[in-house]
Length: 329
Image 1 (cartoon, rainbow, N blue to C red):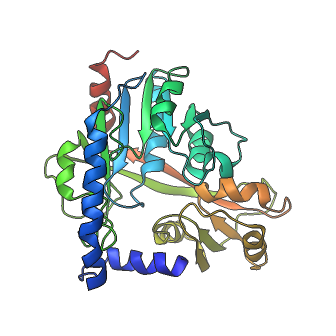
Image 2: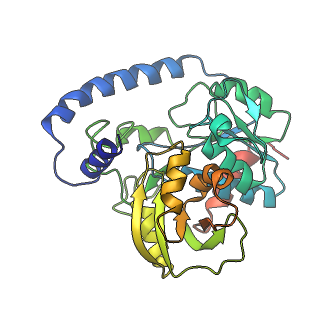
């Protein structure tokens, strides 16, 4: 599975045409996706709170989770009371629930736990996000829907779409490329944000904002007294893990070896043993750390890469303009 995932990723983000077999399957995905979207458009429900949707048109790797955390923290500073609603990817919970800081990521999902840990905001994990939106009304006055651009069951006051700095890869739809929808779907977006520092050619000239998450430092999730290492073994279970490896290098760390797992990977005891027996300091993403830390030996540091988000001047104010129109306070 890991090799297949890596093979597809390489194809998606190259400029050369994808294999004929994948291009032959592409119209099937396109037709099914279009049908699903049409059904979701049919009768959207008004959520109990005014809702901002944060989504993308590419499969993974657009920076949604760190952006949602940044947005939630920024809105809190402006005296709003944001509630985050997510699907709970990587979890097994069947019903909408408020995520607590000690919840098992295997139940509520790794991203849900990360959002709760780092935002300090109420987070609702719900496979049925309509039900989750009803629960959210008890906890705040503005709802942020994570990964919501294709989830048309709920009405929103602002549709934000993130596009990674690398653009949209080879421009094909899944499985031939990374696109979940054609780029023409960006016409539905209220705000388009390019995430990263080296953005490619604008897809919507005059409509795009910049936002980036920069690596800050390594933090020991186990809070041992071990000194921060100069060299690390880097492991990541995220979409496009090379970005994480590059971030470590940008901090001046020597990345001696790497290991990639599928996105939302459920780490096993065998995985932990393999990582701790590598004989090197291990560095992981914040999303992976919420799953690994409870399983990690207490006397061994688990180095987590912290990041700091920063938006282009005026971006937050533009988002708040959509909220002010609903008189949220």
